Image (cartoon, rainbow over all chains, first blue to last red; front, top):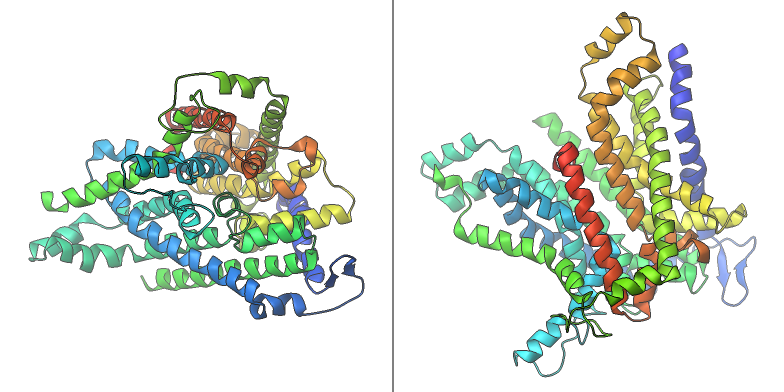
Length: 283
Length: 262
């Protein structure tokens, strides 16, 4: 019994902080999301409505933002996978001497401030930015390309931000593929591409799925990069929540949107952890 | 056997992607040395005046100080609370270990922006808005999962018989933890603490909802100033952050073999 007491002594302080400053605040968001909001006068006290949730699917503008967010999630995940796999492959299967420097070059952007990385892309992508200046000087284009405040900018920025996560997940997966299996396939007459397609790729599937889920979830909840590269007009769910709380002061709509976003991410993570557990059970 | 080495095309693509990862960094560093009042590459002339502008601007200095205090404070509190809680979980002192572990990790699952608005509403409700303490508590919530994750991973790697030996030889629980367990998990904790520090240093989605005008942090300052238009002092302060990150990564790698913990 002394064990439980010292357990409480050790666990209690953190439990208190997390309950008071995380669990309760999140739960208190729920009642707000069912309240009615009148522009000008604020929250109607004592009201109950499902309208804030209904609007997310019914209203054209909201639906566009939600679909855009999910679409970005899928495209950024695919881009990270396509770009990340060769890097992970080179790190694990390349010359051992390059392993540490390459790993550090992947970790470095990850450790670097998100705002700084997004700012770097602004310098590159604005109308009179590095990319446009270069293309104009080379005579490729005459008027600057619109690379920011649209899908292109947000997509490039988010892919850059979340690529390191994907690479690290794929490195972990590739390390678990025994080389003997690949060698066996190759001895049995499989070509290089066939070995990859029939052996390496399926064996790294758990890592691919884990990395994809991580990148997808991070992308749909991103605020900083979409706002900095998408501006105030090209909205995603997180930036819309931000505006509803800070600019429009429509907290009911904002909290309904917040709940929907949290619900989607938690659902995806929950389903994926169930599948992973089932796989682990089968193996 | 050479068959298994990545071929020329894979190597080329991989290196191109690695360069893509570094491009914004290189651009920011180069732009911060330009004499011009707009951002340009290659830099026109060579000057340190934007760095001087940052280091003499009280807005920047206050923001840097706020960020460092907040990151240092929340990392230390998270370390103490997180390691204590992890040890209780590892030793299975409480029932429902699995549920409790998920609770500690859950701030990673909930989108930051949602944590931000939830705390904004909550602290407004209890009348505790706009203070440093509020920010500190919020940052403990978002940094503690990294400490718990690294503490649990390191604890699971140590040999229980070493702790038992110390106990048999007469050391009490606290002494055993201090002299045996703590040194064994230290490398993992250093990596976890670095992650916690970086997470606090770069947080915008939670901080922006809670920080009063006097608690503006560096990332919030950059984030909001970019909306009004960019000037090279933003590049200069970014370059300073880049240098600090490189230095931290270098020290951590030398000290603990940091890349193993990522």
